[in-house]
Length: 242
Ligand SMILES: Nc1ncnc2c1ncn2[C@@H]1O[C@H](COP(=O)(O)OP(=O)(O)O)[C@@H](O)[C@H]1O
Ligand SMILES: [Mg+2]
Image (cartoon, rainbow, N blue to C red; front, side):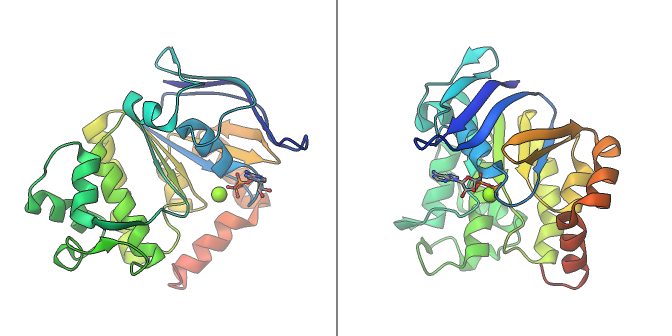
């Protein structure tokens, strides 16, 4: 279980990006949604240790991890997939997935992880994780990497961005299987209605606070009625633009 207790992230100029966030997360699938600029990525970065809260506590399975570094949090069982993934020149896709798994994995295992995210494995295993990969390819490789890590708390920041509809459908399967393997929590920041639909719980962030949290039955009707992003993305998908 991950707990955020009165977590705030305030910039040196006094501007609060997140204010007094209180959350307890122990569901399998949690979706975080909300308007652009509302603080979702900041929330994810606070969980992963990329940003340190300016006040409040973060507790993972009873252990206070507030002051732990990114690496220490990764060891404690937190994985994070960036909205804009990082590139690693000189490292091949196969290396990266092996590093993530924490052991030497076979070529066929690497290929299986890549195929699951919709990449034709043989074209990718020996490629460098550098600028020659497109944004969508990089995001899928990052998802394969987190799948190989199999940690108890995995955070994905808008995994759908740059991913076509065909791969996206498979991606939902990847998340389901990931849960079967880790029995942990998968927290996905998303505007995708199909992701919101499979979530055990939906958390809405707006204006730097948690404005709603509940089951999809409780949250979705309000979101679809008032906030356009979900409906908008649904229409884009229907038009084949995702
Ligand atoms: N390190 C930072 N310095 C200044 N502003 C930031 C920083 N990180 C985020 N912000 C601002 O905080 C707000 C929330 O950002 P973000 O968490 O990325 O939103 P979301 O992911 O919901 O779109 C935005 O207005 C963004 O520009
Ligand atoms: Mg974001």
